[in-house]
Image (cartoon, one colour):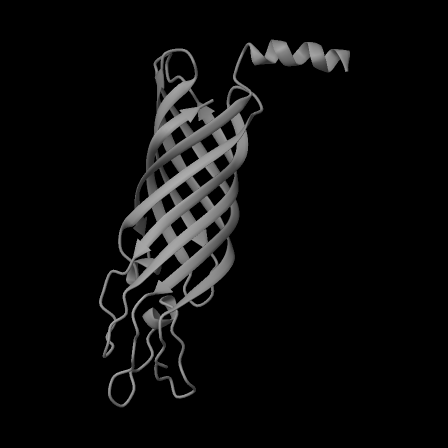
Length: 210
């Protein structure tokens, strides 16, 4: 215990033990998600621990909005939206000063839980004689009968959970010597939702302390 107590203050003088971040920006869907959703927004916040000057780990919350990108070919087209929520455990390798400058860079990656919420806020009805079922209808929460025709649905929502992974890079600019930094990050996300996998890249700008 005495050894541990003596080591911790000495280590704390070299680097901050705690790290946290908050930011937001645009979200760009990739195929197959890009076939059904357009560019939206994102918000993220996280906190964790620095093991040393270059290695960190923590938990991060992410919200990403994925709006509909095309009109559904129905007699009454529904107004639909997707909200994606994620909690992931991530590792981060960071170099906080490149060549002694205020600029830094890092790699981050991990995995966790992805919760997709699809909402329809207008009644949708199949066209005359039925509408052939397409993959986009599965994405937006509709179902099909045994003949492959769309089943009309009223206002509804559909929720689905899945595991997923992420990985990306970021760049930082340090403010003074207190450990506060501006960061810009691009990260790839892949979640194993049924029928259509969820794939997207949030581009995030914000503040990071480490």
